[in-house]
Amino acid sequence: MNKLEWKEFFIGGKEGVFEVNASQCEIDEINIKNKIGKTPYITRSSKNNGIKDFISDFQGENIVANDGNAIAIGLDTQTVTYQENAFFTGQNIQVLRHNNLNKYNAFYIIPLLEKQLKFLEWGGNGATLERLNRMKIMFPIKNNEIDWEYMSNKVKELFNNKFKSLLNSLNNDLDEYNALIIQCQNKVDFNESYQEYFMDEIVNIKSGTRLTRANMIKGNTPFVGATERNNGITNYVSNINKSLDRNILGVNYNGSVCEAFYHPYFTLFSDDVKRISFKNKEYNNEQSLLYLATAIRKQKIAYSYGYKFKSGRMKRQKIILPTKENNELDIEYMRFKVLSIQKKKTVEKIKYIESMLNEIK
Image (cartoon, rainbow, N blue to C red; front, side, top):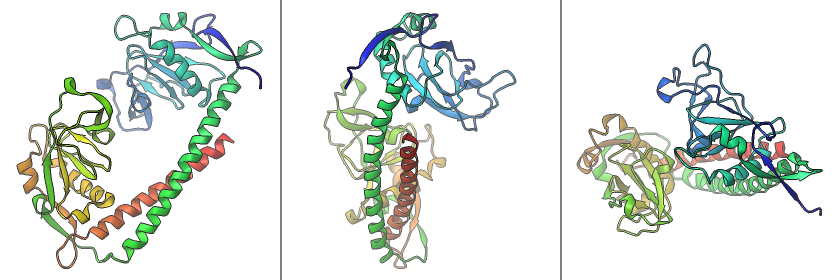
């Protein structure tokens, strides 16, 4: 096996690898004209591949989206993302292009860029066009030229291994869902009937515990706050307090009010979040709690930041759930409905992963 050779190159400029330019379509979020659409709107965030939203293709007569197959760098945050499709941006985004760039070698290059950009910072020392053009990064080479094919093949190999592992996991999940669906079908009464319940009748409502950011100790335990994103997780900590719980819902009474997320893992909960579980412990499985979370979210319209979903209101809030003829909760029906959705989504994921594996070949 030949030893891999490396060489230093300027990122941009006359002698650089990439054509580096400011985004041609910077739009402040408040100036977005048509928010409903399929074109990514990219900001300097490190989350969700920089995608803040999807907006309409038409944002004005002279505003044209950037072409896809490009690397985007946030000026102040030094975030680096690959954008396969056409995209709009917020302010202060630099766009890197090269004829040999593709969606595989881009993921080899991004860590190389990030390694250099970590020396920059927010404010006066950000990733300006001038600094990017002067900056150098190391590339693998062949015959003294950048080996684009090697980078693509290396990433394809990594993707292939990851996708195969994921496919195996998804097929195991599908087998489990099929077995559980058969079990439920034998117990479910498909004569659907629904009834209103006060939450206090059927669930336990427990408080979270206040933990300020200043007192958080970095760790691996999810910390759930009053957000509507990331399944409610806002940090990972090593703190321990009385809110530590699992196989439970976190329901926001403050912040993003009435959002509800299921947590099968041990989690700490903010004092802005209530912990919700069925009073009957036998009902507390993944599917029934996910069904309950949806029923709770449907009440969101009644609450706001100024009218919080406090414990007293939560207890007297009515929710509609499936019911048996004897007026008991139909947990098996709830579980069956969610299992059916999980099965459908898992089949879709399997088909997508299989298509990605075929594309890599």
